[in-house]
Amino acid sequence: YDYYVSSRIKSDESDYHTASVTVKNNFLGTITMEGSADVNPQEANESDWFVIDTKDYDDETKVDEETFQFNKQVNCMWIRFKYTIKAANQQGEVVEILYRN
Image (cartoon, rainbow, N blue to C red; front, side):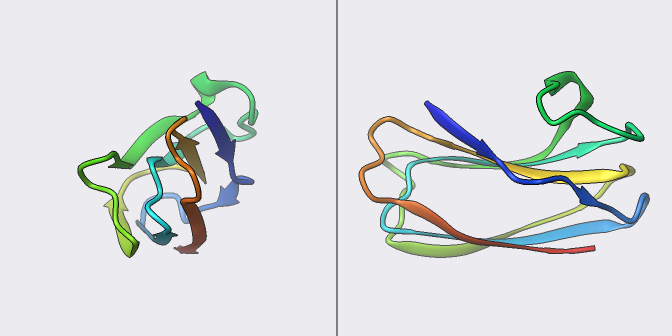
């Protein structure tokens, strides 16, 4: 699997974190919203990050196009998004990720 990680985003430490994610063309993979309570988390250090929420698309749940939301209340200083593309993904893509703090 290939995966991609967004830049980290400064968050409002104890508020709701809302993101709208749009996928299209039968995207196959996993999209994860991650948080960090560390003051200066390292992008490559997975132990600095924890999973807030995950959405998975496989052969049974793939869609032509869809926008979904993550909406969680969690204490953290930073937010980032990771998406993992499954090998069977031919043309599916993550179109946009909008984050509201």
